[in-house]
Structure formats: structure tokens, C-alpha cells
Amino acid sequence: MMGEPREVITANAVKSIYGVDVVVKNEEDTGFYLVPLGIS
Image 1 (cartoon, rainbow, N blue to C red):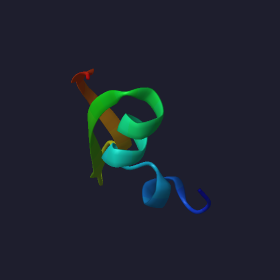
Image 2 (image 1 turned 120 degrees about the horizontal axis):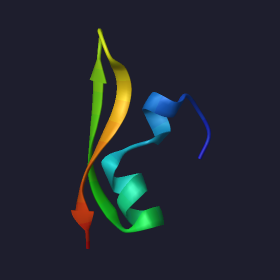
Image 3 (image 1 turned 90 degrees about the vertical axis):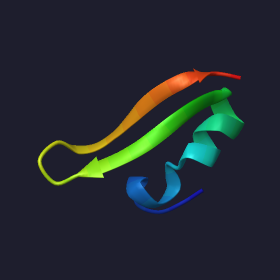
């Protein structure tokens, strides 16, 4: 995968690599971050 982090760090990519369900957030005041939901 190549590109900007916001383009390549997706919920599906994180799950396929790490096995963790996440929500990907990108908010103007806090920036780009992940919220872990659980391991599947």
C-alpha cells in the first residue's frame, strides 16, 4: 500500500493486517485517529 495515511489506513486494512475492528476518524479539531472496537 502506498499513499497518504488517510488513504491507506482503513478499517478493512487494519482488520486484515491486525485482526482488530476499528472505526477510522478524521476530525478537523483532533485530526486522524483510530477507535478500536474489538478483536475478531
